[in-house]
Image (cartoon, rainbow, N blue to C red; front, side, top):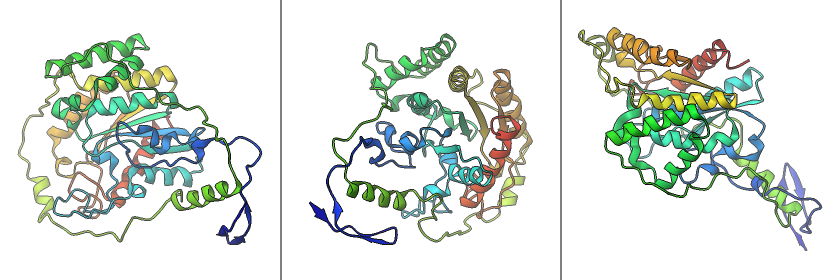
Length: 365
């Protein structure tokens, strides 16, 4: 049976043979994967699970919108704008991939598994699903205490998802103790666990061989790759920057003296970050923690020193590398669109700073 396939790679291919080719082909190479967060029940469709990334040394970004940061310009968090300019190539993760490529570190790749609005508990679940991939570096970016809002979003997960985390995190005695203490804190603030629940199914990394594959199938796959896997695509449309804060400097520099306060003084929620670090240590990987830029708090010494001394002190105590980029110099509107979220240009600065941080910490060549 014959079919006309048209132009492929600049050549006119006619009469493509649809007879099955010799050999077995893995269906996973024909499946579609996304660079965006696909949802908690579809995590295996994220590009980190694509078989072509199997041999990459993986850097995984976790956190909320200041880390996800797929907004290319000021439309990202402006509620007045419904048609937002978002694109995966604008993200911190994609900007870091550009730097890795420029530095010749082609065996490394960064993946964005952060999610707009995410708190700590759902991100722990995301991490539990990635462990079979053995990520080399987990990067958590934090905007002070967003991780604990709404009881760290404990109610967002199903009993089966909690059962899966129990199954994974209880593999090691030290991690199990931290995980149990973390759940006790969630219970203290209103979460009610469900007992004796069957865990969700573990992600499969095994090949799924196709019954038949033709030359036309392979040509179609090649065209799909060209359309969807260009290394660094452009934003979805032209960038727009509209100033909407009258006096950035006055608002930033007029904060009166005040003591630093934390809603997590006993680290009941914050201890959850040690789940990442202890398992990473068991698997031969590392965790890196950073505080995201906050333009309006950047000159508030009580805030910046409190973050460094209290939370930074906790991280240092447990040997978790961290840095504070609260005062990273970003241009209003152009690089930080609202003082907290960054544009593609701000993301380039954040990515460059993180690349240097990872090298200084000995986590990158």
